Each structure stands twice: as C-alpha cells, then as structure tokens.
Length: 204
Image (tube, rainbow, N blue to C red; front, side):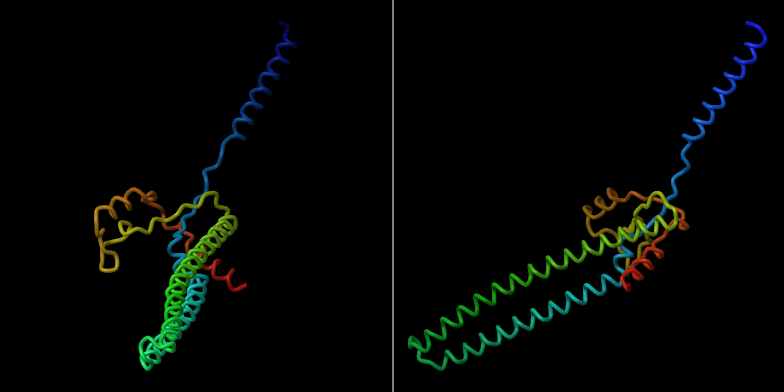
C-alpha cells in the first residue's frame, strides 16, 4: 500500500471512529428527574374535597329530613288509627295506609343509603383523577420525568397518640407489604406545589 492510500485509509478509520463515538454519546441517557407526592395529603387538604363533602352532607341532610317527615306521618297515623274501633273500615283503611308508608320508608332508607354511597365513591374518583391531572401538570412545569407516591403509613412516622401502632397482625402485614418508598430527600417532595395548584385550579 503506497503512502497516499495509507493516509486515505487512516482518515477513513479516524472518521469512522469519531462517528461511532458520537453515536455512543448520543445514546447516553441523563438520569431521570424524580418528584415525590403525598396523594393522601393532597386529597385530605384540597378544597375540592371539602366542597364535594359539603354538597354530599347537605344532600344527606335533605334526605334525612324527608325520612323524618315520613316517620312523623306514620306516627301520626298510628295515633289516628287507635281512635277507631279495631276491625272497622276506618281502622283497616288507616292500617293499610300505614303499612304502605312503612314500606316506603324502608325502601327510601335503603335507596338513599346506596345513592349517597355511590355519589361519595364517584366524588372520590373525580378528586383522585383531578389530583393525577395536576401532578402531571406540575411535573411538566418542573421538568420532572417520574413522580412517586410518598408512603404515609403509620410506620413512616414516630409512634404517638395520633399515630398509634398496628391494632392487629393483619394491619402490620398489609402495611409492610405495601410500603415501597423507604427513603427520599425532602427536596424532591412537591406535595405543597401540587396542593397549591390543585386549589388554584378549582378556583378558576
């Protein structure tokens, strides 16, 4: 191989080496930026929860008042029925009316209980979905790649009257099995940012 060809081959090899090195560098992935959020804290403290709970409580009070009126009507009917001679037509008519009202009362109690239970469940789902939406928004604003849930179980905090130990073996086993996040730097915690954004979004 003459000197000219040797120089050309050397340049080609050098160029190929630089290309491979550049490709390798381009494949290097930067460490993921991580954030930590306490879903429980955001859920418990957000204004959306307080608002939906008040709405549900007001509706529950309304339902209770309806049942109370029906109960009072039944009691009043019993007093009226006792004024009639037992077995008389008036007595039987009143008895029939009372039995119908009593059936309505029991049916309404069961219905209202299920209705309010379902609404409570749906409200919690809506709040949780909103929290996830806000977490994603805050994460993008902070240029974070991964958000982990902060463990807020009783083992994560010092034992106290407000944070008692497990009441039974099942509680302890369940807690240790679901405890995933054992340590994190507090600077990674964006719970307050998420809570603030959550409450601000609700005001709009």
